[in-house]
Length: 405
Image (cartoon, rainbow, N blue to C red; front, side):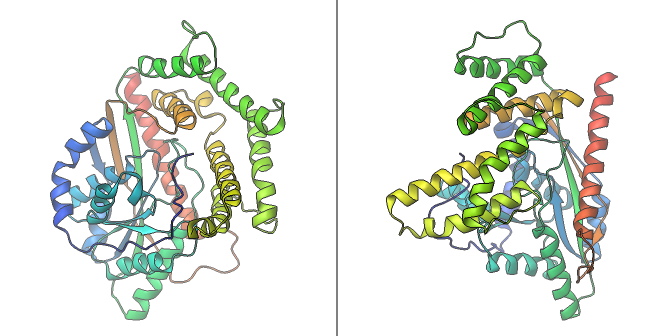
C-alpha cells in the first residue's frame, strides 16, 4: 500500500501567494520533466480557450485527467505557455512523501493541501477564494487519484463541481463582472520507444516472483494477460480461499464487494456509493481520524491499518478496465498495464522514456451558482466528463494514425 494516508493530525497548508519560485521553476520545467519523467517533448493545444477566459477575468478552474504521477508538473507547461502561475489542490500526503524540501517546494509552486479523509473547510474556502478572486487559475484533478489509464477516465468526483458552484455563488454575491468557468484539460502521453523491449524486463521479474519460468518467446500481449489472471487469482485465493469463475468484470466486482461491503457495514451503516473511489473515501473518512489522533490501542491501530490496506486494494482493482488492452493493445496501454502490475506488486514503477505529451485545453464550461434540482446527474460534471473523454478519445485515434503512417 502506497503512503496515501498519513497517521498524524491534519494541518492545513495554505496557498502561497508569491510568484517568485513558480516563475523560476517554470524556466527549468522542460529539463526537469525530461530528466525525471522521461518526457522529451510536448505541445499545448487549445490555448486560445484559456487565454480568452483569462482576458475576460473569469475565475478559471482547470480540470485535467490524472493518468500519471507526472501530471501535476506537466500542467505547469500550460502555466509556462500562458505566462500565468497556477494554484493546485493536492492531497496532504503529497507534502510529506518526498521529504520536507519537496513539500516546501510544492507549496511555493502553488499547491495547497486538502484533507481527503474529512470535510476540509479551509481547503474548500481557499479553493473557492482563488476562483472568486480570479487572479490565478486553480487546478483540480476530478478523478481524485492516479489511474494509469490514459485513454479512459475513471469516474469523476463531485468536489470539482461543488467548488466551482461555490465560487460562482461568491462572485455573484460580490458583484464580480466575470464568471467562474471550468476548462477540461486532456493530457495524452505518447510513448516513442520499443514497448516490447521496455516491458520485457518487468514481465521477467514478475514471472520470476511467481516462481514461473520466464515466458520468453511468447507474445507480450499473451504474457500480460497471463500475469493479470495470475494476480487476480492470487487475490481471490487470499480472500475467498480459491480462484473464482466468471468473466474478469464479474470477478473484479465480486472481489471488490467482498472487501468493501463488510467495512461499509462496520463504518458506514451499510451504505454504499456508486464509485469505488467514493466508497473508499467514505471509509477512510471514518477510519483515519482516530488513527491520526494517536490514542488507539496498538491492536486497534494494526486492525485499522489492515482495513486501510484492504480499501487500497479494492480501489486499485477498480482501476483495471477489463478490456483495456484487449480492445486496443497500443504501446501506451500495454506500458500502462505493466506499470500498474509493477506498482501493485512493489508500490513503485520505474520511469520509462521517451514520451511526448500533448495538453489540450477544451472550451470553457460556465459554472452556475446553483445546481439544477430534480436532476439525477450533476450537469457540470457530466459535461466535463463528456468533453474530457471525447478529447482523450480523439488524441488516442491521432496517435494510432501517426503510427500507421
